[in-house]
Image (cartoon, rainbow, N blue to C red; front, side, top):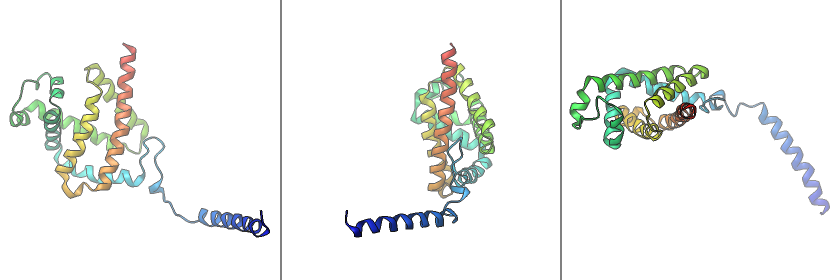
Length: 194
């Protein structure tokens, strides 16, 4: 090591320490960038979810019907898990069916409860677990929740248009991934108890 090299190291170390001290007092990151300990979502991502979902809340039944119509179209075997709907093949007839409309509305209302509780993780998680428990009792296969997630993002895009921004899509993708993890975990609990 030369004398010149050994002189640079203390200088570099000093400047690194100075920079670290300086940047520690500056707000380079805001609370909006800090992920929630439970969900992993930032405040900004939660806001994108709330803003996009507010649009859906103005059309609960329509959105729910479109969601399940697309699920049944893209994944026809999923329809077999709905005893009163499984024999309806015409998608237009299916969309008008009161049981289909009611189920779509219930699912969208459940999402409303989830969005309302994004900042109350204990309630948020219990709602998700209850969804997992109830669907496990109906023997709904795990993969339908993953398929519903793909369909959900498609229908959000179709129904909201440019109001479903890339940031909202990313936030919903992360949120749905977390939701799916909790739901499937609850389903596994029930299955392990059998």
